[in-house]
Length: 82
Image (cartoon, rainbow, N blue to C red; front, side, top):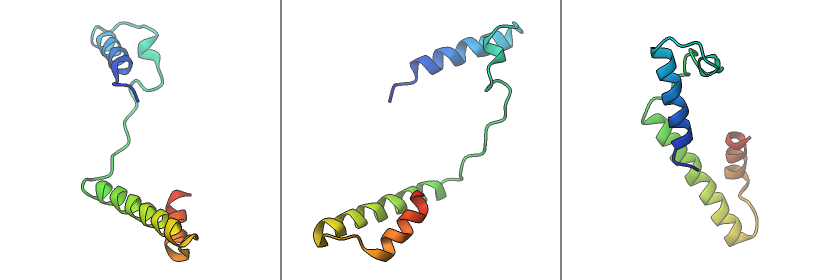
């Protein structure tokens, strides 16, 4: 859980080499020139994350209260969590 300093430094040096058309090890890295995958459109990604988080919290709370996992909610959660 860093702050991205090392990645920012690497990205900056790589971009500089690309702009200056230098043939260095950095421009040969696997992520250079590759298209990035599309991110899930907001707010759908956020809503999905919140729904799964809430479901997991409710399963945990029910298990703590009753001493067993709720069957239906647990099955749904397990499908999403793998």
